[in-house]
Image (cartoon, one colour):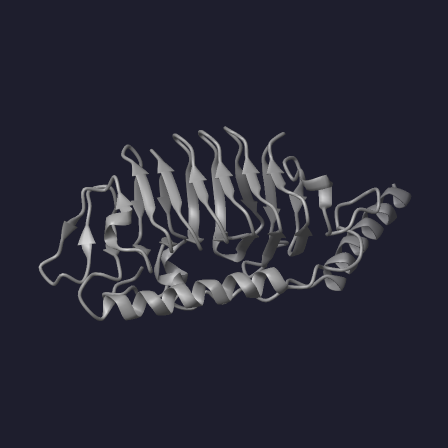
Length: 273
């Protein structure tokens, strides 16, 4: 029994040392892009049947690039609304100061993407690896079935959540930050989930993606998507976080909601976004 207790104490100490050697990276500052649950430079296309919680914005493209929402213009001409969303819709061709605020938000979005993409990879072996794997190309790109701890994970290959669910473990710290950055795409298979445990929060998971993000039918994704090209949510998929795309976003009967209101900034109309 004594030998067993010593083994358990030793194992716990090893985990503590690994966490201490790889502290959580600082969060990525979204600036005013954090006012939106979806922000896209080239438009948002929606197939009705889902629902969006939060504000939606496009810029520099005009409001006509937000399709499938049956937008209703507010009397102020500064924003529009839709039965497909709880929040408001903003475009640069709406009444001032909407255009100026959107320009700032898009600039902040691009700054956040560049920040995340430039973060140095977490050094040393991956905490949960039994074979000496590192935070570079962990799992050969397949993170389904893995439990990820706080850190910066870097890939020069596409990241897949295809075999099974992926879990983010916050090590008991609600401020734990995870950054997954890839020069390729993030592909999530139908029916898979991103699971959070031990304090991990969607608002502290940053996906920096140079190509596209594709969330399969019925899949559930979480985090902040900082995407240089397209984002697509297939039929019946769902998402908690923010979609910040330098091109376009496509929604097919998708349910999109922002992170918890406790950490939200004030929206363009002074409301909690």
